[in-house]
Image (cartoon, rainbow, N blue to C red; front, side, top):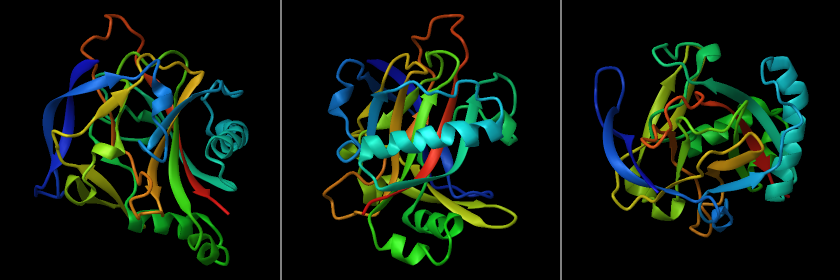
Length: 256
């Protein structure tokens, strides 16, 4: 268990509809009881399976080598019939440097969910053939991130996940528009709720992973729909710990 600062969102102005709202929260280390947290109940699920690809230096190699084994892993864990990975992000913490390009991504220090319902549906249309999208959207589909440390254990700036069962979907989530030159996306910011139950697994290794549900088309209350998550500065991090390095894949996941 650790107490740490997590940045939430509140409504704001000046070019964006949110501002950071830091709060000290209790974050529980679930190592040793991680099996209690499943995608359809908590919205996230830990596992252990080493990747065959280990360099994570070349995007083409990642797509040709890491994507296929990750699709197999996602299907095995979820029971899905198919999965399509649509992008990935490498994060390497570099204190003092700006996170201003795809090659310089750093841990995100803001509670968020990667997709809204609208942006999840738009992802299907954007990444799959137009003749296939309508039938796929009639099936259950999810957007799931596969996150794992690379190079060494993630002791520095670990990943925190909020148990969906503690989230008030109607009141805790703030749509945030992402405006690009050629398109518009949308994510959820997360407002502070003292009932939130934050979890992490201390010192995750490259042989371990976590699946993070960002969207589920089943929204009748029977399963977890999403998982707020964020990187955080653990005040108990030993001095001199290697800076965090990680990769996340984002996948469209479909069920028959």
